[in-house]
Length: 278
Image (cartoon, rainbow, N blue to C red):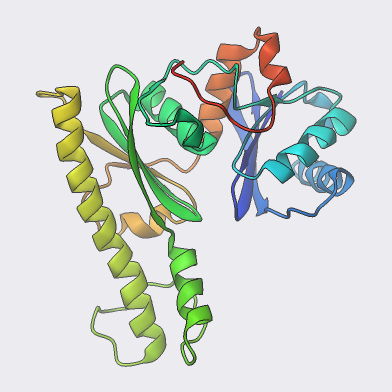
């Protein structure tokens, strides 16, 4: 079996694949100061609860935007799985050509999402990932990653209202019944959720226009694929999202592993990503 880790700033999503099929997945908080043994015990308990055996895992792949957690997970997989994890970074072949001023600045999660979306849906397309940040990635049908946009995520925006104002409370991100609200909590929910949807609609529309011009899409429509923890909430009330694929990143990791499993350099990749046009 293959164990895949998608390490974000807020959550770690992990999944286990058997013969290329995702058989189980979990989500847990990203804890930068948790030890390798603590992560090992948590993962082992998750496996046991689902009737799986960690000893059946033979290979591991990790995508992370948190370098300190990567170091810990590498040690955890060596101790509890008995193998060195493949890490998304230098030496990894993706089939993607990255058109970026500085390819080293592209997050590993954005690369994995792009690879997964192109392999599953074809291009041209826009991938919108609703995580700690809301990211937009534009890809052509010939597998060129041509850039995108990054905006504060819903939770960051909500936390900022609570932390930077004297009287506004911390709230749950539930959808209010109307845009015009008559109490503080619903007014905040209205601004956050409907405002974020409006931002997504506008940015996606502009990106699709520019991407069509860049790629020469012609009659090929630009599809919009959404993923991330808030994707389902954002899909409701928007018209720009074609498909919500919550497991997109994990499936991208499995795809990249298969492409690189004979590449020994992939297991020796350093922590800091150094993307090239590959």
